[in-house]
Amino acid sequence: MKKVLVITYYWPPSGGPAVQRVMKFCKYLPKYGWEPIVLTVRNGEYPAIDSSLLEEVKSIHVEKSKEISFLRLFRKITGKKQIPIHQLSPQNDESFFSKIARWIRFNIFIPDGRIGWYFNAVKKGKRLIDENNIDLIFSSSPPQTVQLIAKKIAKNTKIPWVADFRDPWTDRFYYEESKRSWLTKSVDSILEKSVLNKANGLTTVSDSVSQLMSKHMSNKNQFYTIMNGFDESDFNGVLHKTKLDCLTISYVGNMSKSQNPIEFLSLIDTLSQRDEKKIVVNFVGHIHPDVWDEIESRGLSHFITRKPYVPHFEAIQFMVQSDYLLLLIPNLPKNEGIVTGKLFEYVRSGSTIIMLGPIQSDAAKIISQSQSGFVFEYNNLKGLESIFLEKKMRKEMDTSNYSREKMTQKLSEIFDEYI
Image 1: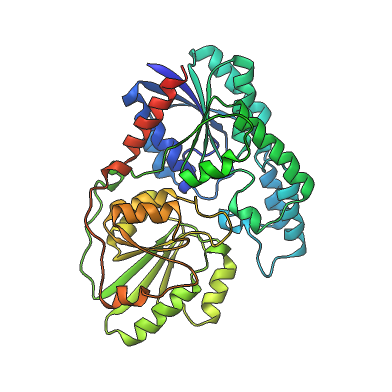
Image 2 (image 1 turned 180 degrees about the vertical axis):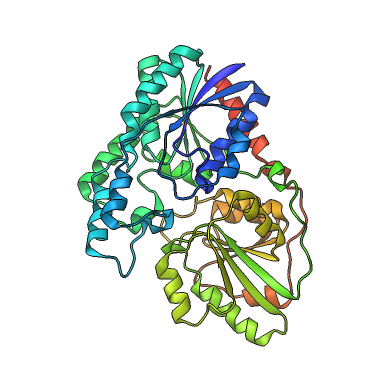
């Protein structure tokens, strides 16, 4: 069995979408000849906790190292007990101290607020390589600090290194909402280029992200696209859809300021008053305060039920039980390559997807290829009303090509190339 050192900040009990990609890779890599040894943070700062995931990774070799947490300092300054990922974007009623703390977070800590993990992680990583006869290093970001750790370890040990990007680096969409200084962007760009040009292999979640990041490279390194996916075992024991006297639409996941579905909800409000069948909208996850304030101010909260973060299995249950699933691509520049992990769980759930976002995007292509739903621009919902009135549903298709196991097989083949 070949051995790969997997460097990731997010690992159970961390919850949310960030943990799923690497966790599922590690679950299936042994089937394809690779034993993962995971290096992660001790007592990390996570946007959500999901202890139910610990059972899934109990057989995996995991090592942890300490972090000097600048995010804990950020929380103390802002007075927040926890900072959900959607609150990386500013709020309308944000205090002066919160604005200062946010500026510090985005302009002083380069490449990100996890940089305090760097030195201990490098030290621990070198020791793990010495003790375990590692064949390859695999690092997955964000946070981008992970890539700097991997670069240093790879340089010192001369071991092949594959860098994985779940999101772009300097072109990450939420930088459009929280601006960074020219100097910060310049330094971060230098770090990004150093990683892209030094890594032996590069993987991303979509073709558009690959194209976006390749513009920052000076060599001819190739990007491989390995999409996220769904794990069939996550659907074991899930209750099948039951017939209800209401039409159920669910949004599962965090909702940022740039994902405001206010026009969609206005249309649902109109339909709920005209259609005899009751319409219920579920929001499962954290919602940016500004988005919820606007929903309430427009009187659109009466058909919405809110539920905070739930364990992954419960999130899957919500997906399967819904008639329609709302997918919101952040309404910001350079959003064509955003393909969240939950999209594939949406596809597998059997429920019909309603996506708001760019029609010419990777997510839209996946929905089209799987015939799992309908896509609309944020500012053009023409035709959406008829979907609900005529109860248009998705077509049944084979979705097995989007499984986490098949994606892991593809990753293992890339690993094999570099050793």
